[in-house]
Amino acid sequence: EAGVTQSPTHLIKTRGQQATLRCSPISGHTSVYWYQQALGLGLQFLLWYDEGEERNRGNFPPRFSGRQFPNYSSELNVNALELEDSALYLCASSFTGGQPQHFGDGTRLSIL
Amino acid sequence: GENVEQHPSTLSVQEGDSAVIKCTYSDSASNYFPWYKQELGKGPQLIIDIRSNVGEKKDQRIAVTLNKTAKHFSLHITETQPEDSAVYFCAASTGNNNDMRFGAGTRLTVKP
Image 1 (cartoon, rainbow over the protein chains, first blue to last red):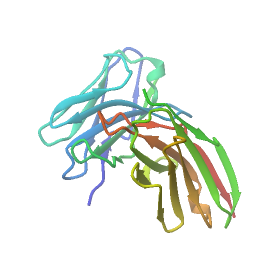
Image 2: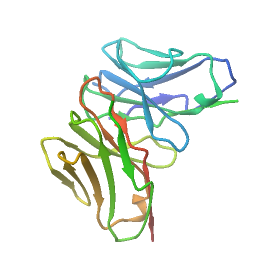
Image 3: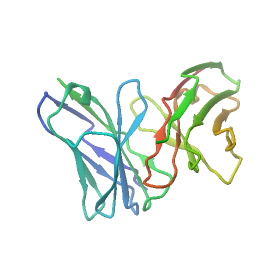
């Protein structure tokens, strides 16, 4: 069974640009979660999508947004990139709103 | 909201010894407590989880204990091996809105 897959593995952007990160959940999972893991820090909850809708949002500014497609894959968009957005962005999936969450290997976003 | 504290931040043990990592949480409504292992360049991997109706759970060399009254839970690894070296994260969730909160992580080093 394929796990959670994320693309790209690495992404380099400059300040002010926009970034798009992608996630494909485990087959059968309908919930997708996004987390930010800044260097040396724990995981911070960003967003939860289920059945195509945003269900919950962490304490992040509106320039962090996303969507979930009919096939349950998801995109995370970060607008007006700032230096402090440099981090590993992790996607996780689960059955509808349930536990446990299973993680992908992340996208490393670097802002120059 | 939920706040999860994790100790110690680093732990070094000799191969074959036991390792214990402790976490405390603040929200008495939390009812799901997973532990994740993160190796370098990888996403967090679920290693064991416990729900609030259980006091202890064991899986081979790994065990988790939960004290709901004191609001703390611990990960115990026995007969440690070099491949156990990684960063371990605890987390707590109320199951509502799936805003899982993570501890800051423990870097475990097992010396051969």
